[in-house]
Image 1 (cartoon, helix red, strand yellow):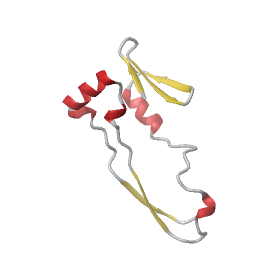
Image 2 (cartoon, helix red, strand yellow):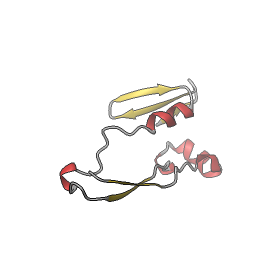
Image 3 (cartoon, rainbow, N blue to C red):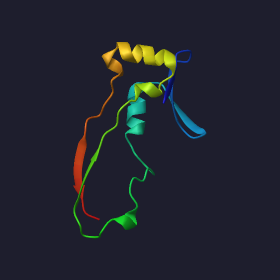
Image 4 (cartoon, rainbow, N blue to C red):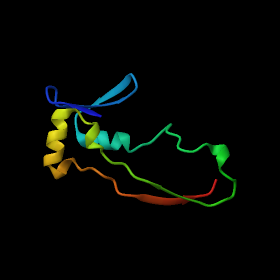
Length: 91
């Protein structure tokens, strides 16, 4: 994700493809829908077995462009963390 101060828009990119958003809320809703992001191969799961899982998303301020890193270190508003979401599932 990147932010353009000139256009006041956020851009979310995955490889060469990207999408532009006008608000951070729109970005959060977009990235909140995880699709096609496999974390485990389906053939590695046993059918009928119960699994416990947890997921968390956070902003790594060290990956931001340098000017944003300075702002991020000085403001707690940049410390974005979804907290852990725990769930169980049975394939």
